[in-house]
Length: 444
Image 1 (cartoon, helix red, strand yellow):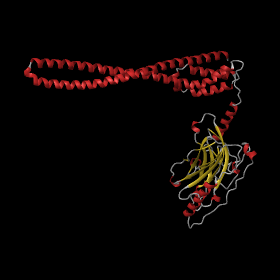
Image 2 (cartoon, one colour; image 1 turned 90 degrees about the vertical axis):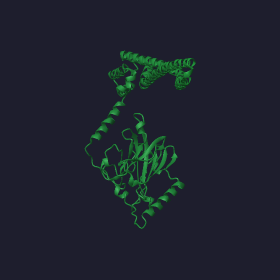
Image 3 (cartoon, rainbow, N blue to C red; image 1 turned 60 degrees about the horizontal axis):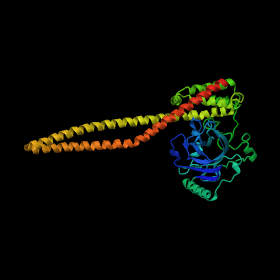
Image 4 (cartoon, rainbow, N blue to C red; image 1 turned 45 degrees about the vertical axis):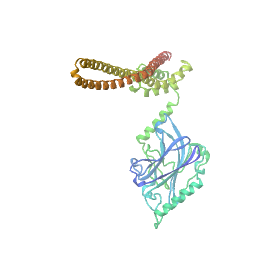
């Protein structure tokens, strides 16, 4: 269930039924929208075992991260609660904020709640084998999430009442252990607006599933983490970030620009249809990025640079257009082959029909000359007529197929002609781009 406060602030409630029966290591909620983007919750019901934890793990995940363009990022601050269905004040809440990106497409708490407490029937986190998780999430940097009112009274009070009734019935005659509610320190709006200084409860505990984990700790505990030797993943992250910073400095030498042009020129020397199969397109992305950062005001015009940068999209589109054109041409060839087969079958049927007709005429002559053999000859005639009817039926069907194909043929011929024109257009445009690269090589 999701409560939409505004386009950039939302409360999503996930009731996970049959919790103990979940076999998968990971389990996702349904997708919900905040700020026009797709989000979902990710849990590890038995803990994030690859990370070696014995805690219930919860994360916020960018649902469509696999289809987003290169270099994407999304900001969100969120507050996750595992609801105590006996006493809501004993619910466990953690809050954090994060700039989501390709290598950190999910973010949350690996050690949210010890599994022993989660499965303890006296605690109230699992009632009738159902776990209730809530998330308040905002994509607006100017909203103070932790002080914003997200509760919708009518629906919320009813839900709380139902949770309490279910919880009390499930642990009837058992003593309920109630822990002190966790305090959430609310940062000022000024701090919240500045990602560099924001610090919210659980911030140090929040991690992506792609990161090494901190020491496991409960939601009400904190501990000082001593400095450790960097892991391979830490070093990879550091140098990836360093590479990104260096690449954003926009310092590109003339030699680098020439090498980038050479790579593009090499790709344009290939046949367009085989371009994608060669795997050449991916390396070209870096070449176009170099050219986009190259200060070429002294060598080429702004229009030339604009056309050069637009060439990246053309390199994606033109081979596909050419492939479709070739496909259209091949379709005509296939239809012509079918037409030839049908025509030959019809010719054979015509020959057979003429042969049968000649034989029938001979029999009729014998009937006229030999009256005494009339009875037998009539039988032969009927037999031959039956054969003629069958041949006629088959021939009629073949003729109908041929006529239908004849009606379709102009359409396929038109498509083939359009395909040939498209092929010529693509080849001409390809050649023009090739000439442009050649001229640019001489200028740079």
